[in-house]
Image (cartoon, rainbow, N blue to C red; front, side, top):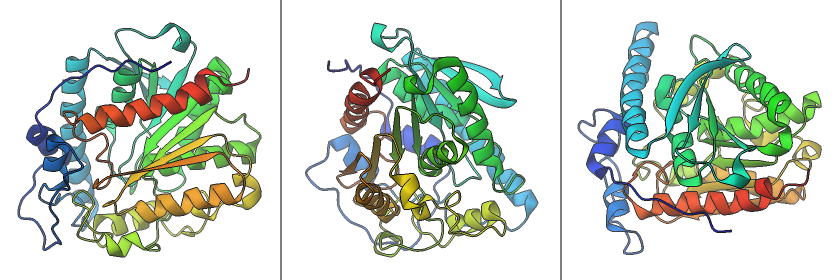
Length: 351
């Protein structure tokens, strides 16, 4: 059954300003026109000046704290405004001692009332905390008419590896007790996309039931600078722009001496026998995404281990732009594709 979609508007310029805070002078970067194959709204997004957020690494603990505070405040303003426009209710609470936010749309489809989407936000393990971490999940609630639970995990550098994945997995285990793993799908983008895959590894290693499905957007599956698109899309991606700034600093702050090739840090290095046990997995990225190689390489590894995996690469999009411009029709299309995947793998999952 095709999921009904509802459209709402938010000016693209305002969305970009809120999502990426202050954009000052753009760094020297390669610039490409928008292709004629994207909408007018998405064209404005893919050709916007490069974000400044990921260009500079904080010099000390004070700068880290200030950056996180600004990001949380801007993200919360965007998310709360979005909730008001869509009618999605945000309720804060605790599960397993970890802060979560339950996102409830005005109406939940009858066949979805016992289902949960578990959302894990991105932000390089250092950003995205607070109410601002619900945006991707909130749109899932809005477009998909699902109840969503979004986790607000601890952030580096104050809380390095494995704090984030411990928090996310602790919440998941409690959700399994309450709803049953067969009624849960996990969604995340960027760091959240990596944590979605890592959660599956944690479940396999601990004997915890696996979720019915994984939706992993442009996942940070390789936190070291390895992979073609870290180089070919450097200066092309107008969201992340380059690895050689806050991304590199975030990797170091989070890993805190841990091996970058630990599968629970970089799931690209998961064992074949673990990947073979993965539930149906949908991965998605964009042609201008700095993390495109992270996504494509992970897809290949899953396929080589006979896991059920699908990959979508969106035209012209930089990192995570499939949900950053709420006015663009491509955003509704993205969530329609997620819902089609869920129709097959969550709503019709074997009991």
